[in-house]
Amino acid sequence: MYCAQRLSVRIDSKIILENLDAEFQSGEFCAILGPNGAGKTSLLRALTGDLPLLDGSVRFAGRDLHEWPIRDIARVRGVLPQISSLDFPFTVRDVIEMGRFPHRSTKVYNRQVVEETAEKCDCAHLLDRSFLHLSGGEQQRVQIARVLAQIWDDDAAGPRFLLLDEPVSALDLSHQYRIMQMLYELTRKRDIGVVCVLHNLNLAAQSVNRCLILDEGRLIADGKPSEVFTEETISNVFDIDIWIRQHPENPEIPYLIPKLEGQAGQKKSSLL
Image (tube, rainbow, N blue to C red; front, side):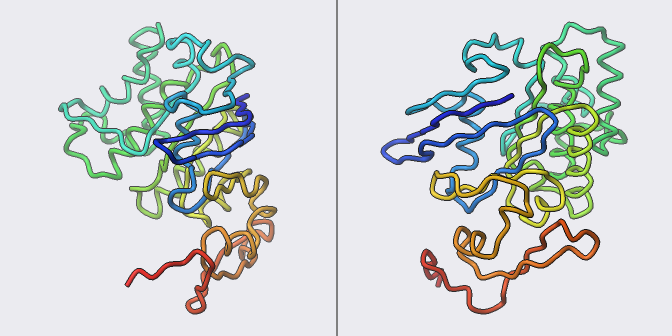
């Protein structure tokens, strides 16, 4: 279990997160949602230990995050930031195999893991291509395969988590839904916890079983999409008038439709 208690983060003189409590379980797919500047990436970076805390603590599997040896936590936790730059002409196979560095497994097994995770992320046909020659969406799928390879072993000593910052931002419509469905299946079949920052609310509603909605560094709502996606909450947080309707194939899934007119809100400022 990942546990954030009374989490507060300040960058320069601005409070980015304020007194936030959240717990994340293995086997759960959770989306962190909110407008630009809400603190979504900061929360993810605080959970990974990349941001110093003004107050509070982060615990993983019952231990303070900083008590974990780097190699040990790397075997059970994969982190994908918004931007993963790579300037060397590695093949796709090489990039995915980087996720195996924390493990002392055989070359044969590592090769098997690379091929399995590449297949999961629809990049197996790219394994011998140069990473630098891929499109942005192809590179993003390779990076997802890399962090997946990092935590692939079922006999890991402890819960396994993926912390992903906008993992489908560069993907086409088909791959957005295919990758999100793949991540959901991982939580259900392999007991992996997935926490990801998303901007597409309808994609989140159809893919995850829990949403955290942030605004100005504070937790506004936490629960199932059907519980937290209300017209009042979404309109107030995202400063846009919407309708919420039932998904045509599943009445348990809310579907958000922005109104074409009347996008008036207390926080809206003119972009003209």
